[in-house]
Image 1 (cartoon, helix red, strand yellow):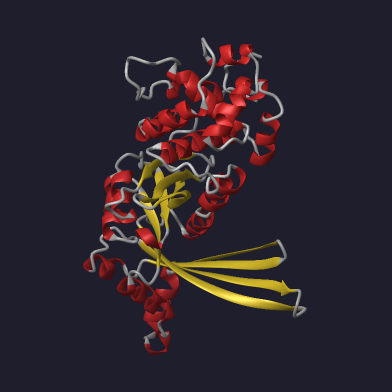
Image 2 (cartoon, one colour; image 1 turned 60 degrees about the vertical axis):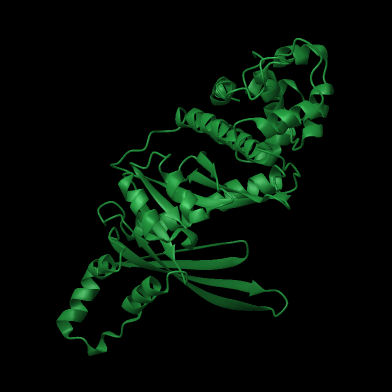
Length: 391
């Protein structure tokens, strides 16, 4: 394993210790290092974390930074439920920013913004913890995370979240839940561009785009038909796998820019229609079944920055946030099965999971589940990965 993860603990050490000056029996960074190492080995709760450290000898305790017997699980619970989760997220983001390429306005990269509910954190009084994440398409790393306050919604939280991110040189891809002028304004004012899916939560916008692409040109003059055909751009690609064949066709136009500006969407520079044609083999019926899915969207990126091929690429890469982040945290790291739900602990542990995943991505790890199993075979492996143990 290589170097990036070895500086992670130095950034986590900058998080304020939530404990008082009196009664600090253990170093803050020692307890955080224990949490990170235990989670690298597949532990996901307070008791499993304490069990992990107690399964090893005194020399491991000393390497982690303990000067006496490590704390019981209740101490880890109290620490994580009181720690400043926002500061922890910022520390992970700052560490990540030092190890990924800086965004280049000449060649903007894609970043997905998406929300996720921590289902195991449900509490009758507080409800469920919702988090917004920014996922970098190029590296597979989480470059930022923010909790959605219980007294607001994802859209308003997203506007504030965007103010914390470096947007210049980035194209943000968002689903229809964030299709609002306020979000578009925040992205462009931050120096970035957006690609947003349009669905029925914005009926006027969706109808305008669908009507443009479904317009019957027979009543138009030959010149109008020619101008429309020349202005549009169309790209298509096909692939197959997992028992299915799929063709994706994306068509863009700039004909609606002025009209949408009058409707309040002043930053739109292109609209697009994405058609997915899928053919799957039905084993029960022993025949092929075909389906067609049509999606509309808007973008602030002009064609010299994002042409039709770029838009097709970004819209496909957007789903990496589901496949490479949310699914991995849920299934491989057991986030939804974790019953941690007190105080800031759910958000804090999600931030640590992001840091672990980022470290593995930067280390070119392909199979995260296999890597966690490998770490669990010997305590020296997570310690060496984090730079605690010198190899």
